[in-house]
Image (cartoon, rainbow, N blue to C red; front, side, top):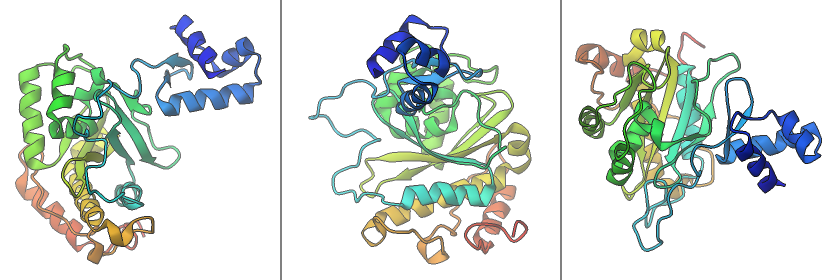
Length: 306
């Protein structure tokens, strides 16, 4: 039945609603909706702005890689402990601190990045065009995938091998300029996009690197470009601090694996690392990092919000 649904979507590039799919396959609307949700979550299909289901633009598993080749950034390296609840708790902690939609993104193949965890409250604006997967032709415009591109020369080469599309007027389409930005991301440990992926929105992200150093996932947030312009230093300090704390907890994963993860200062989620200021504002970033370090979160919520 799923294969029939995929063939049906392939025959209708303009997309079909769940009700239309159910009618054509002889299934109830509830069954059709469940099947559509499953296909979208697995990356085989996506929804457009009107809610119609379309066939995915790329296979969700990416290009085939022989087992004899080194593991990609989406895989655990040799000797890496399973992250357990560390990564999920990091997404929750980032949302608690910022009250912006928080994401965890990893590579699921050579060319495809997967949005594997999201936190956000009802009514919080969603980043337009971001579904469960980021295809390679859109990876250059998003802070989350910039982090992954900076961590993987293979991923970078594959994405920049094709012409870079202008997703918005602000998108970098020059491979040389993009390469320079990705080099900067690798040095500074964070990435930013300001209306490069979607008009009116921006994203910030930082890497969480596995203990062996061979695997990287991206932790970040999306918000309106207005909020990003007004609070970039504070938001960036929170993103980088939570990512660094999660990496430290992952490194000591034997103690936390499979259990709850604490957000107390002793576990590191409250400790702010040195932050390089975005767009040349080092003093403001330093003050922001200091505030983040002094903050007593009470499970990550500021005193003002409490």
